[in-house]
Length: 169
Image (tube, rainbow, N blue to C red):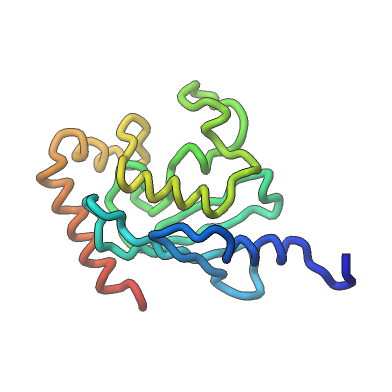
């Protein structure tokens, strides 16, 4: 390799431009820190989140891709698989290996072949189709199951409006 070649920087910077996925954009928060990314997710069409512009951070561990990044919504979002602090809870972001609770299969959890692209596809899919059986936000999951077109829809609509107002601050 050429002298001064930073393999991780090359890997992360090519990830930014490789295989763009409709509905999101990603970039480094700080050009000097390859491990922290900011992501803008556009609410998927034909969902309650449509029209929203949700900001999130992806924080990669030093041993990425052996371990998954953490994802946290910075924009307020009401969703069964996002806890009240904004942390995203989906299988693809769970540590690799066996699930001690037996809920997830190892192949549903983090694998080193996953990329920002596969993470974002999973998050966009999560917005379109929440997993109410394994919620991070129990209150949102209960409303989604019992009053999807009432209170749940109102709270999501409020988050969408707020995200539009604050998207580019």
